[in-house]
View 1: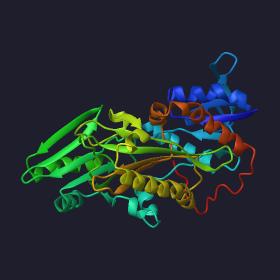
View 2: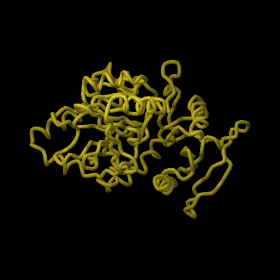
View 3: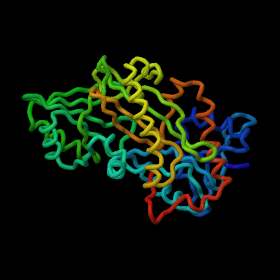
View 4: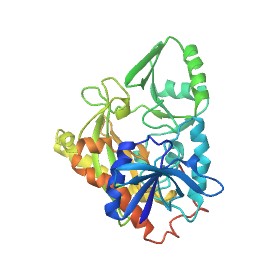
Length: 367
């Protein structure tokens, strides 16, 4: 029986998703074992984790060898535990006897620099790293509206909208599903705040894009791409995420809601709908191969695509460890496929020769 390893930063992470996979594993000739990177014994190379018992539908603590097939669902933060896990995961990914479903993508800035030299470059918002307050002020003066994003951010955390008015500067963010708004009376006060912000983490700067609908609610298209049981890329589904009125994020973690993609599409004029369909087809057909030509192999990609008020289309974010809430909400009929796809692809990898899958000399390991 094939052991399918799922690696997370804690044993409570994504319980529902992991349980659903584990329940389906036995019928595919597999068993699921979940573990945390720091629970690997560096001397014996065994790991203390939990194996799913299909007889009792429960998890059992066991000490076992590191699985040969691993599904990486680690979401790193700035905490000490994340910093301890990172080098262990890098070591696991470098081992020839272990195969990962996907090897992850680098940070947002490295992704941008790679994709801007490809045919997809016209869909990327201009992006630059900012370490100095002066750079932010210069861009704000030129554009009036800008966005600051953490280079390593996820789920919309730490994103700020800045707007320069005649005498004041308006800064807006979203925390705990609430819009936090602040008016700086002058540039000196803004500089003080920016100095503190840029010391906390690495940020990138982008122009503000008008991505809201008629109700002034931010929205985007979330698409999930995955490899099949034969290793072929395909689209699992898509949905529309809608944020709160006056907000800057459509993320569900920030309080957003979802609607079915087709429901949204039929509300558009036919010509505009057809244009968007064709543009999405081009992006989604070319993105997986473009990424895998530059980085290590992937299994799944969550793509967030924005439609601006002027009709322009933008790739807002690319995530190698996407969630499934949008599709489960808008396409419940995909439930079985969403829970079995990782298992089927893991089985495919375990039964095929993986010797040419990783080329360490050419591509860096990502998380």
